[in-house]
Length: 368
Ligand SMILES: Cc1ncc(COP(=O)(O)O)c(C=O)c1O
Image (cartoon, rainbow, N blue to C red; front, top):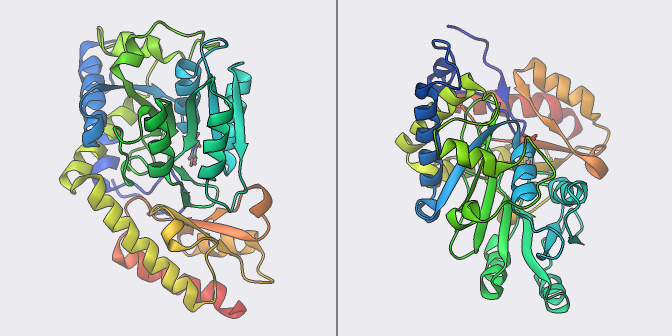
């Protein structure tokens, strides 16, 4: 099948490889037949093996939904209810703030350390808060804060969690498969992510990995039927069936994407590839006097935010890139008027990057 190639530089979904795209279309399967149970088991087993630190002692569930469903399911299922403890949310962007909104929606006790969107997580302030509030038992935060492209310092946050015995609940929606995740050193309790970003699968499925002890613990009040992940765990690790209809074609694609990631050298190789792409994009934008919001050292390998040149209107720039075959992404919230974002996940070849450099010159050159 020949399809038009759209180069998606938005933070997911990504441009698919032919191998993954072709996996999407096959015979029709019911999600409540043994062949789908086998596929579900295969995918869950492959997901915990993406990182060596989760290969033992963790198990995964997949659910039909976007990354937000996985994060909300993780918090609904594992953040403590009243009396059982309290969750500290470390927020420096839209997605950390969204975690706090979810905890509010599920009536879970929490407090928020709200940082500036342009600032790293203030580890001294986290330490102070933890000293002052010994009832805190869980820390919830975002690995790659896609609002700005910042890779939060999880080594520092995780070291605090580990030394104090706090459970880390991590949103790795835009980093799983391409950035380091050190389950042991970070005292990781659970991590939520999605198929259609760094894993290069199709949209429709998300997943949560959590320690086996957590799955075995008595269910907390989830306040949700659909997002009660222990029901998924009981089904998928029991008879293999999920409580609700699964996105079957997306599961075919996810299995293939995980195999492709393994064949390509795993997450470390993907990080190398993304870093090269991101560095090249940053260099070529600098040639057009377009500056990044954050230093490369603070940025993920997945996405960077850039300042729009003075006088450059985002919708016009977006449309010009789209005509050239590329989808770029707007800034969020306070950055909507003066920033744009470029992600570099998915099937992007050297020719695509050459064409992108030409588009930078055409579209931003007049403002340089
Ligand atoms: C860090 C992070 N968390 C959560 C989400 C939400 O994912 P979705 O849009 O798939 O619900 C995103 C989306 O980009 C994200 O980057």
